[in-house]
Length: 120
Image: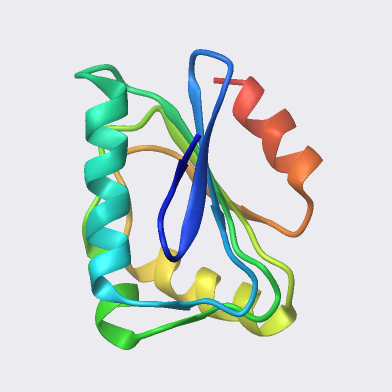
């Protein structure tokens, strides 16, 4: 496990990297860039599946949101777990305009997200 000021990172088996953002965190551009580097360091050139978990009271600065939407890591698939309707609307808006080269899906349930990732 790796921990930063904004999130904890867990390896789930050999092929899933799980980023769990902390409760009431304000996610900044630096946090997103750091998460990309953690992924690249852990993956060591392999493509992995990514599980992103955002708590209900997480907020993200505009620059971080735009960077995260426009950039990507070489992943097999990416599942995003959110807790609120407001986060769901925002996530769908950004994912509809910023297409990734890998599948990306938004969930409100962690188990459903893991089930979906298992299909890759």
